[in-house]
Length: 144
Image 1: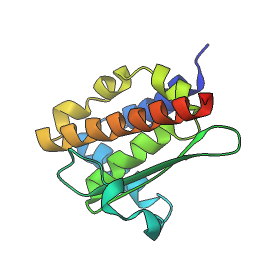
Image 2: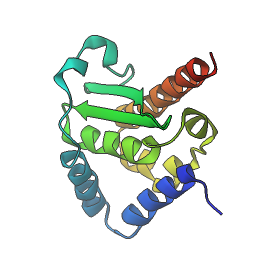
Image 3: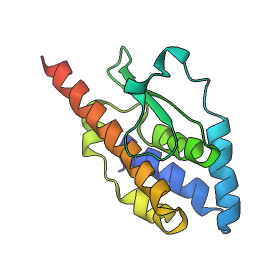
Image 4: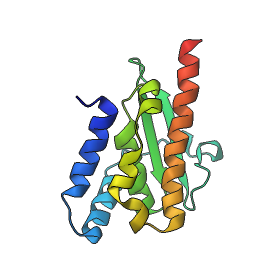
């Protein structure tokens, strides 16, 4: 039986895997980015920028009352905004420990590394690393 993180990842892989042509997959990823909720202006600050992204990516994570991570994200580039939507779909709604335990093989299985420029692929990985850092910090805070 899959846990929530694996379910989230499977849904992403199923949605993109159903599309054979990469051009169409890009359109789907861009569409996901366009569907992101409006990013709160108070988080559009330097301290919320993801380091390692060529484009500007703002990322903020908080815990809801159920102890689940709520992710808000935005970017100034369409494809990167779509990639950030993938990160949100994969990890939002999970508890910090679930994020830390979540497998990351889905990134390779999506085939994005082979179809993104090296700088975009590195930026995508930087977003995931940032989510994991938030999860680690929030997990430590929850214990204290």
